[in-house]
Length: 171
Image 1: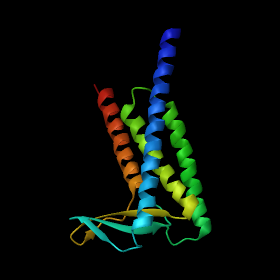
Image 2: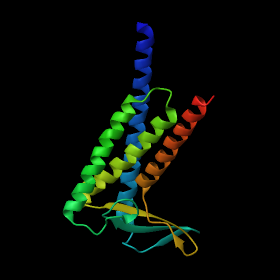
Image 3: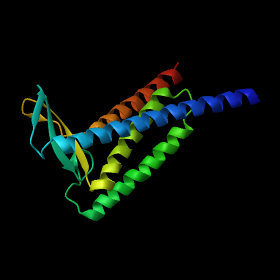
Image 4: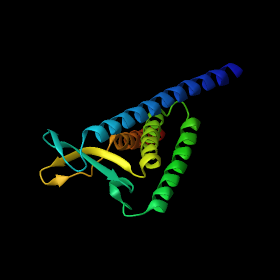
């Protein structure tokens, strides 16, 4: 019995270590890409990369899709505080996950890495730096960044885990 508990704890620590690596990798890639965008791009001046993809430097003082972007310093502080609280909750949830919840672990790690990348921007600048501009014809997706991509991919993995668990419980 003691051996099984010890092996389970070792497995959890190993998975937690890989989660830390993924979170750190996302934060580093996000911050490096934003630093590059600030040094190479001009605000709202688009540079075409591929059909349907431009680089356009933008600053988002709000949340996803620029909701609440018209606020002042207290609103930015509130958004940063809320994002910080959610990040703490995500970290605790991630730490408590069972070893078998692999998609959920990777998903929560990606969400947390993305959230931390955007929190760093809010603390440093008071807004989030966005620069990836995807479009099709006259339809333009809101400009986003690497952290936003990580959050979206993380949510997708989290949903995959929920679907997988439901399918297993229905068997």
